[in-house]
Length: 420
Image (cartoon, rainbow, N blue to C red):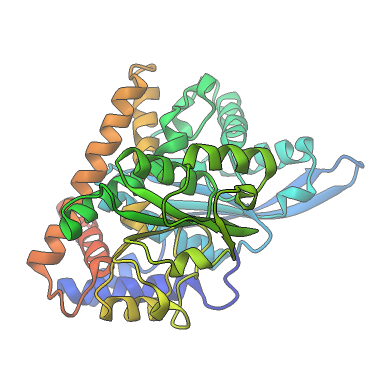
C-alpha cells in the first residue's frame, strides 16, 4: 500500500478539520485529536536463517482512548512509514466510534517485505515486535488485529508471546485469531458481509430494495468474494468482477460460487468462461446499480469518476475514492457509503471475538452473524439520519456525515471524562 502521492496523515488532519468545522468545535479540540496520545517506534533485531542479524523498524500508534482501549491492525509492508501508521490509527478512532464500539483507535506496522522472509524468520520478527510493544498493549489497553500481510497465524504468535511474557493465557489481547485459539469463523466473512448489508440498506433508500439490482465488484480477495456471495443471497445480480489480472462481465449475471472456485483453483477470475473479459479497472465503469470497490486505495479519482454509472458505491476497500474523485461523484448524486462505515464488519466481529474470549467462548456463530448484521444496519441508519436531518445535504456528502458523527462521539466522551 504505497502512499507516494500524498501524505495520509495530512489527509487525515484535513478530514478532522472539516468535521470540527461542521460540528462548530474549537481549535483546542482539533489540537487534542490531531496527534496520537502515544507513538511507539521500535527497532526489531531478527536472527535470519543464514545466521546474520537484520534490524527492522516497527511502530504502534495509539491515537485516542476516550471511548476505550486502542484497537486496530498491524501491517507488514515495505512502504509502511510513521505518518501512515498515525493516519491509520486516527481513522480507526473514527471507525470504532462510528460503529459504537467501546474502543479507541490504534494501528501498528513493520517496514518489511514479508514475502522475502522464511516462515521461521517471520515468526521471530512477529514475536520480537510483540515483545517490544508488550508493555503498552493488553486486553484492556490495546488490542491489535490482522491487517495488510498479517493473518490469524501472526495473531497466534502475538498471543502466545504475550501469554508467555505475562504468565497467563491472554486470548483477548489480539483478535482475528485462528478458530482453535478463540477466533471466530464469522471474522473471515465479516468485512464482505458487512459491506453487503450496508449496500442493501442503501438500496432500500434509493431503489426500494436490493433484489434484482445489478452489482459490479472491483477486487476479488476476501472482502470482494464475501460481498458478492452475500449480495447474491440477498437477491442482487452480480454482473462484473475483477482481480489484479483482469475481469469478467456478464449482464445476465455471474455464478458467484463457481467464480470463487475458479479464483481459488486457478488464481484468477479470468478463467471463468461464461463472460466477456476486460481489464482490472473496468468494473468501475460498468452499467450497474451498485459498485463495490474491494481492491486497492485511490481507484476512483478526478480522472475517471465521470465514467462511473452506479448509483451507490459501497467501499469495501480502504480509501478507494480520492477526495477530488468524490467531489465529482457527489455532484453526480452518487451515494458513497464511506469505508469507515461500509467495511467496519471486521472490527465489529473483532469486538465480538474479544467479548467472547472474556466470557470463555460462550457465543455461537449464528449469534455472531446476527449481531454483525444488526450492528451494520443500525450504524448505517445512524449515519444516514444524521446526514439527512442534521447536515446540509447539498453541501455535505455521506462521508462528511460519517466523520462528523464519529468525531462528535469522541468529543462527547472526552467532555464527559473531563478531558476538555
